[in-house]
Length: 163
Image (cartoon, rainbow, N blue to C red; front, side, top):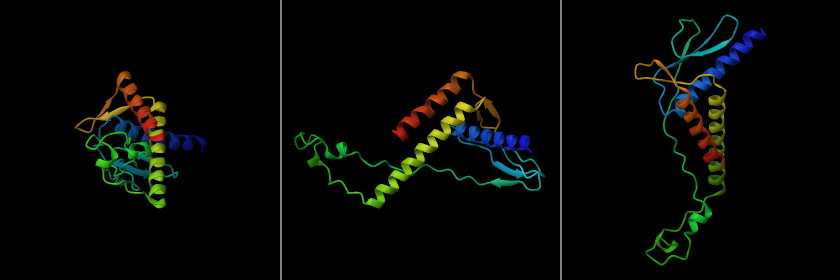
């Protein structure tokens, strides 16, 4: 039973690593993801159909985020020392004041992006091998330099989204 749980945990980590590596490496998952449960109740996620009776194709939507970070206070003030026509505060329309609900929603979205970035970095650092999929849907394993570049990009995203 313990071995089965460890296998399920490993499968979930592998799935997370695959998705994280694909997103951070800049490639889009070209294949479908399938979920199935074996006779012992263990759940598996795979990238090719297994033929199991309990198999389900997962529809994972992917679209760009509509999140736009709120302007910082010092950027909104515009450095009032500039003369008119030189990018001073007088040249811009008045900044819209955010409501408490808008501020709360923006903070919640930023926190989610931060956590997602941290999860991606964790999966990339704990994965033994990283890969991407080519145009034929075949795995192409990343060499050490490419893997390190993906980890570095993930670390930069954590810095950007969590600071």
